[in-house]
Image 1 (cartoon, rainbow, N blue to C red):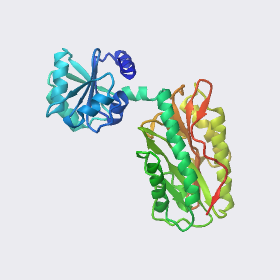
Image 2 (cartoon, helix red, strand yellow):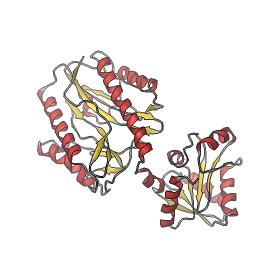
Image 3 (cartoon, rainbow, N blue to C red):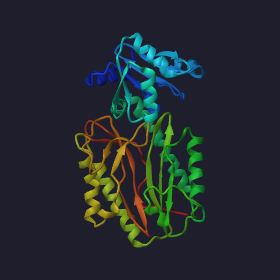
Length: 357
């Protein structure tokens, strides 16, 4: 039985007049085949779908790669790719230009000889933007685990701990409950460091009367979640509470009005216009959101520079923020699925202003 993703890829290949496509990006390889091993080459032609791997993975690949002809490649994998192309009388093959280094491309040219290489960008990634029901179910479980981790950390974190101590507990909790790893380096940013949008956990000791931003996610069965909540210790200065309320208003407004057919630019404006209206536009320096899936940052983008059109089946984040150097910052983020009529929110952690410790 033909792999549905292979069928969709062949349709995309036909639009670009490609008779063959070589896939070497590890995420794209797993997406196309279901194979979770660390080594392999995918070759898709008009009539065949091959997964070439080495002897370590032959049994595993045969079980996982449904609809693929699994072959053990030679000492030089590209020799095997060349032999398959020549045997099929194919003169050209596409390659993933965004995943192939200059040196690797030179090696491909040397080994493939008469077979021409055609640079291709975003072919599989365009398919990955649209999640099917099975993918969304996995992403819901990843989101549920992020929510559970946040509930856990609210009970664990307190002033006097270092950010890294909190980060380690979060990582352990996610791994203990089924995650392969965190989706990315966990951000635990307290006090003035909360004004750093990517302030990964440090040796700083969490103090009293501060904000703490937690930005984290679980990588579960190949898919990511991405959740951000900001909480307080003690009684932070009034401006920090003020910007919390503004960010929450912007985030809730965006969730209420986000819908299919919007461009990334229009979606971004839902949050940005509110924050700018309160005079904090210059303190919101990143985009409102991004696509989410097998990688934590995928297409589409919810950005003031993005013309991406939101369509049903896409999963995106909604994460406005305000950051004031020397004082602190706030970000609130949820993961949502674009539906036929609006959105479905995957992450459900409470967003009320919360004091811990």
